[in-house]
Length: 219
Image 1 (cartoon, helix red, strand yellow):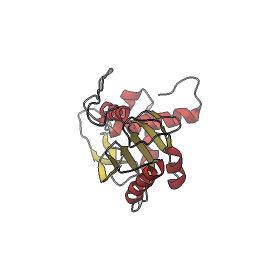
Image 2 (cartoon, helix red, strand yellow):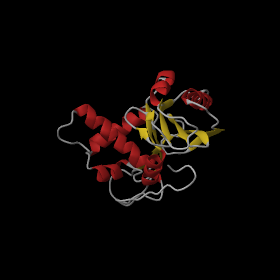
Image 3 (cartoon, rainbow, N blue to C red):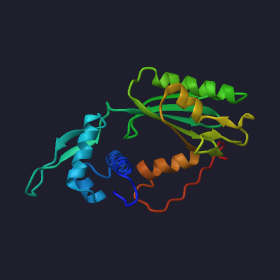
Image 4 (tube, rainbow, N blue to C red):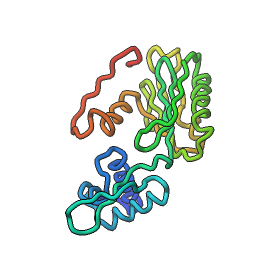
């Protein structure tokens, strides 16, 4: 929504992101639903949807008929042929990569055991996974990294996780951005899991959520 104290560019990006999130998570499926959910004007929503359709992010699927006078709403969805995103999960036992769209539909998955001795070998493994994921896909818009912690989410640096092959103090984000020229976002694995549950899983619609990570990779 529009907020005082923010410039028009910030508001535009925020409103675009909000509309994408509402469609991708299934909270809204039409322009009229987004108007009611966001409080934005019909014109603003129409302009945002038009722009996202031009960029191949959204697409119209079917007309929904109702008894209300006026135009029948048209259902929207994330375009399955639109931009993709790569995700990398770094656990103590494996490095797993996925290629998905904004609705979290997985198009490809790769997993490699971690047998690294230092940060250089870890980065080589991450690059190997990403190279295979991105090699045949030309429309990748960003990369997300979920890793055992602790991590510095601002700098994208792996700090000193316990029982992690003696590996610590590794800059994960910087080398990936440099190699692929894409925005990279990094977070702790449990925080990433909680965010996924809040947007797409069992925590959807709840204001307060407690997530407990338990297992051999917890730490």
